[in-house]
Image (cartoon, rainbow, N blue to C red; front, side):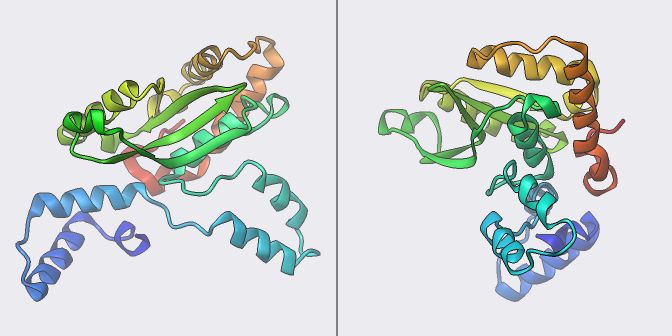
Length: 231
């Protein structure tokens, strides 16, 4: 994934075409663009357990204690930086500007019941973030620029319709919401309301929430291009 993300689209397309010729596969430019687009959304990461083991081997290193605290709000199976950002915004306590949700699973595979097989070509689906609060479940979907493509829009619509038929309520977060303080605040309020959580209306919380929002998007402007919100 990392080597693809460092290449331009034209360079990857040429490399992909050469690979298809060697393997005697039919080359498709649109397929190359699809693979490239998906790879740009993915980020190679070290599993949380491996990070914990690394910290265990170096307990006295500078920053080890802070890293352990941060790991409480990091979740495996993220497919993009902004999925990670969404999970952090949801899981951090309100004292740090977050929503305070502890029950979060990223990209959990969900088997589609046979009664819905006629509604989609897939047999299992994933939700970007499945959150649980006091026995209520809510699906959180993050959509960046890649999801604006016509073909992707159709796939997303089909997928979300099936998830609704399976009984999941879905709330969508977008790069535009991360880019704007009030839009982000309203998006978090919508998630709170859907889960029956109490509101946080004081100005100090809103200030911390905005600082968190800016911190979450700060380092991804150049790495993700149009898919990344900017200040």
